[in-house]
Length: 167
Image (cartoon, rainbow, N blue to C red; front, top):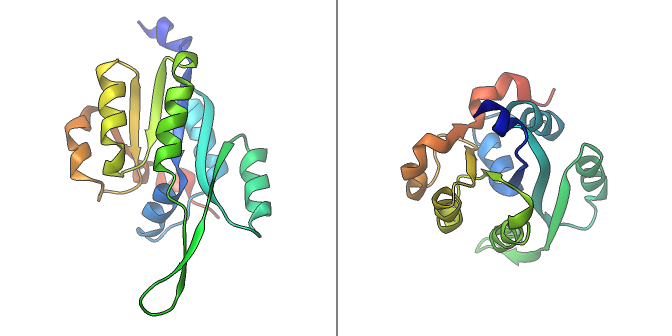
């Protein structure tokens, strides 16, 4: 069984906003380069898709993410004012992540999903039913209760905090 796993193609699909905000809510910042290396070494990920809202002026960030090996899938963003008049940038990537995991379906044997968002419940359930879910990496202990039934797949990124902290 182990040797079969060695040759499986494993792809990661990452909700960057959920990951970034989830880690920050715990008081630390994630080094995305180190995170990708962890995915490669610990989970044998071959391709890493990072779903991210595109904000003009963040080109240096996007260039860095691509230079450390992420395949960035950009979502156009909207600027919206909240009730206090503060501008918030909105770039929900859920549909893109689900769509790309299906577009890539025949190219991978297993998927690692990185998000604690319950909106991915149907995708995660489908991957588990088809024996294509490798891991569900959640950014903190407060993830959607819809995902609890996938406990055997869940790994909290906080377990690797010391290895993954931005310095």
